Length: 140
Image 1 (tube, rainbow, N blue to C red):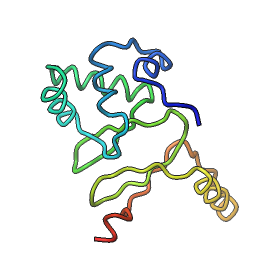
Image 2 (spheres, rainbow, N blue to C red):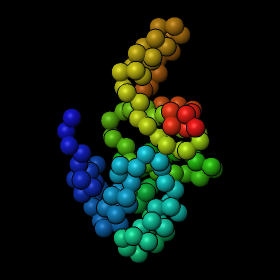
Image 3 (cartoon, rainbow, N blue to C red):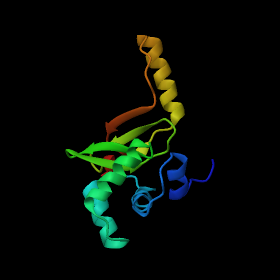
Image 4 (cartoon, rainbow, N blue to C red):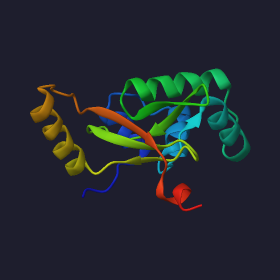
């Protein structure tokens, strides 16, 4: 598996200029399993790294999502963002702790093939979100 690209390289690959604001937002979200809202991103950046306006955070999040570097999720009625690989993949979303895990592609491919064989439906596997309870929450 190739090493993950640093924020500047990821931004350039998708055609975005690596501005300080985009770098800061992307760096904050890389490696997180739980999506963050714009307000959470704004608060964390202002407490830890730099002062950045909420409007700028929204703009950066929208640019990164439009470019495919972030996926959006609905959490408690708010849009939240999570860094994701640009390749097609699926998400397992815990409805208790909001953790998002990427599903192993071979499992999904097998399931979608079986779905097609039984129904004739041809699914588009570029994004599939499955909600449920993660193992950690199920054991508590």
